Length: 66
Image (cartoon, rainbow, N blue to C red; front, side, top):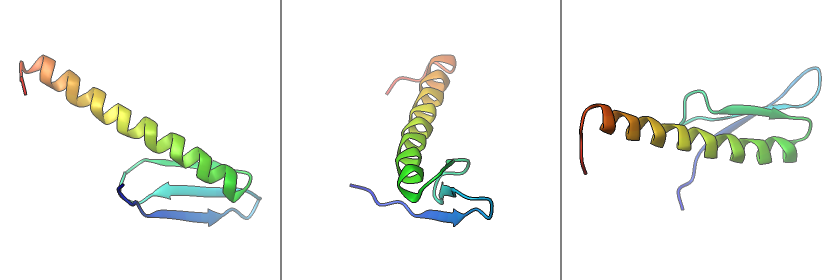
């Protein structure tokens, strides 16, 4: 299983901001660290699915078969 680096920042107004360093734009927040970690797992899943969909669309548009 691949390991990713995350940054967790405690917000001054409460809650936590969290992002995955390796994936630009993959970020979320939560009221607690636990909630933020659950949310980042969901965000990472969505980020990867989006990348896969982009690759599939690229292959269709450019008639690329693998």
